[in-house]
Image (tube, rainbow, N blue to C red):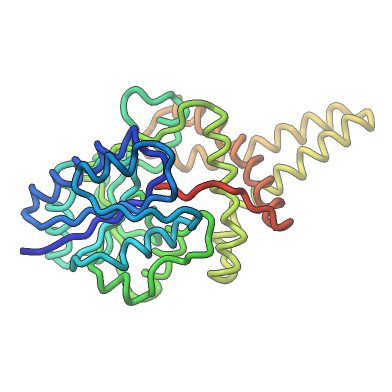
Length: 322
């Protein structure tokens, strides 16, 4: 019988970890594989570690480490021929493993991730933000350049081949990890025959903006660790352009040219509109396009701030969590 080791980084996820572990166990049972659950805790102050042990997980308590290091430490004690990485707030569907094992056996790909959706009770901005990456069910699974680590499945040998996650990255470690996998010959497949549920959605605007500021701080680190890439630079350059247009609008207004200021303000809306149209076109939903337009406009300003702070060697002190 095959054996899978499921590695889950965690920080203060008592609300979700029981659901996450139970769903993973059900998926392993449905796929008829032995399941090893490894929770790597980053120094939680809630009951998360206790709950994880109740569900039979091995719990490593390692405060102060970044997210890549947590995943690597969990993998170091893993004994399965298969490795899965999931976040502590993700509920995997029961057919998760059986579906992906079948795809691997058919030779279609080497590393897999399911699309994510939010539960019905999530606020509109969390649902819209998640839907931007969710393809309609009529679209087939397809090979991609990189996969997020909210859920990843692969044979252990692929992890060993590239030496695991980069332990110096505050965020963006999933993109860097899977880009290296692809460079070493792994085929990455995004699967949408079924979806995983993301229960750790942002419950208020402050949380959403805080997470985006934190996430966008990874661009400079990725460029330093992965080399120059137009793809990695594209969004930071968009965001800096928006900041420049904002500055020109304010300058024009102060100089007594309100019409010029209005033109600059309108131009700041174009990058967000372009991004929202590209991501929502597949859904054919005007409401989603408008929602994403507003969210991207805010995100572009946050990304510019994060990129500038990174250049100034600002480091957000945020615990690593799944």
